[in-house]
Length: 140
Image 1 (tube, helix red, strand yellow):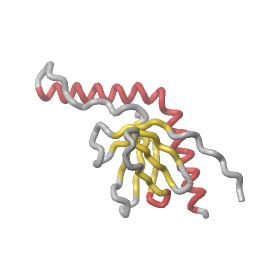
Image 2 (image 1 turned 30 degrees about the vertical axis):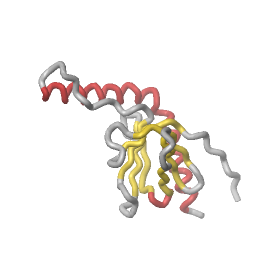
Image 3 (image 1 turned 60 degrees about the vertical axis):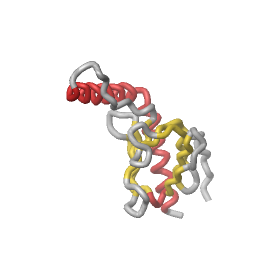
């Protein structure tokens, strides 16, 4: 039997899916024996995603986001874990409605792009550890 490598403590993330809305829930994400676990900072119920439920986990290109695709049998199909607070998509009131939306989206994309440079390696490492653990659990 191989030597068990201890996982680092959970990382701070915001979980975003249809349950949380675009602002997400802040908490910690950790890789555990049977899957990944999100523990909300507000003390709410942890969300567990078993390795066998996960189809794919990858870093979304040019963003500080880990995308986890789940099997159809799971309650939802896609969960995003933002390694920064999700940018605000609410338009400001300083210009017309269409321009406000465009500015809000452009500002959000800019924020994600800037933070990508800071968080890229952390997310890549987390996704690799997750995929390694998933592959190891499939063989047992």
